[in-house]
Image (tube, rainbow, N blue to C red; front, side, top):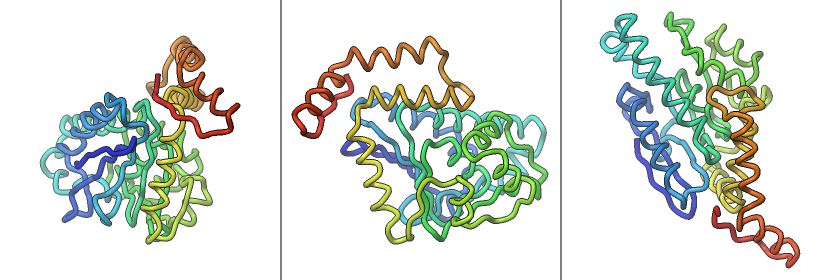
Amino acid sequence: MVAHAADGIGVLAINNIDKRNALDLSMWQDIPTVIGAMSADPEVRVLIIRGSGDSPFASGADISEFQTVRASAAGGRAYEEANEAAFAAIANCPMPVIAMIRRFCMGGGVGIAAACDLRVASDDTLFAVPAGRLGVGYPPRAMRMVVASFGAAAAKDLFFTARRMDAAEAKALGVLHRLFPAEALEAETMDLARTIAANAPLALRSAKASIAAAAGLPGAPSEHALVALADACFDSADYAEGRAAFLAKRPPIFHGR
């Protein structure tokens, strides 16, 4: 994994280009650590998950580990736990997370995309979950995220058929929020991220948490915690700044406090 942040935008890049960004166990284990560091940085307001450079988003699990790490039930379960921890870290990240998807989004990559808040893709992207052809059971908590994000109908199609779904169909089914020509993907994604980063961080955090709870996502905050997050917005300097900027007809400048 490669991570960096600038101008309020954090980037986590999946970096295993020789294997089309297949994720091995160590990479899954790195995701919560990187997400935790980004979440703790007060300057980061939105996070993008992508493949390195112009490489694919993610081609799923590293198949070479099926004969080693995942050869037994115990090993398979440990691997699943690493998957679930990675998906949970993404879904529970307090800031909005954008999946910038290019070319391939397969297997565990679909789980990563589902855990993100927004999904944008190039028009040459293909989606697939080959678990049925491999005899692999998908982690239940991760499946809940897929269903909450994609809908039950799209999830059944992907998992039951194990077929490849193109980007246009994925957009029509609601799997994707935005679809762009391949050459425009990065610029459009950065524009979206800048738009989000310009908004009040506390308000975004409150909205994300409340939406997660309404959608029934695993790990969503309690009702009491949601009320506290909303109350914190009204008590914040950012709320005062938002009102003042609105009255003055100028862009607000938020500081997350």
